[in-house]
Image (cartoon, rainbow, N blue to C red; front, top):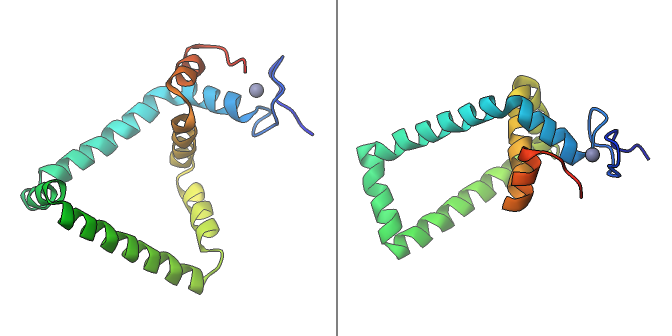
Length: 137
Ligand SMILES: [Zn+2]
């Protein structure tokens, strides 16, 4: 089995001669500013939507009216289930192809998302260590 090329790291190979931890660590360090920028912009977009008058009313209702909230959630769940079911019916490889397509179109963004989902799974302590310096265990 191929292993990570970092000395004293005994993890399985993931990409570019590195394990998952080291690959994401290096990727994160190289693109720290870009990743931050990307999420800043994403938050800006969300804030703008939030400030929209009509949305605001809905949101207030959403967060204050529990019944309304449950109903909305149920509707959303049903809606996304229906959508996914329909897509899979049309094409069983729909999701894989969608991911591949996204990766091809936005290779950088795809890595950001992978990087973030990876970082999200870490504990705060692990995150600090990973960003700060060495990963040992
Ligand atoms: Zn490693």
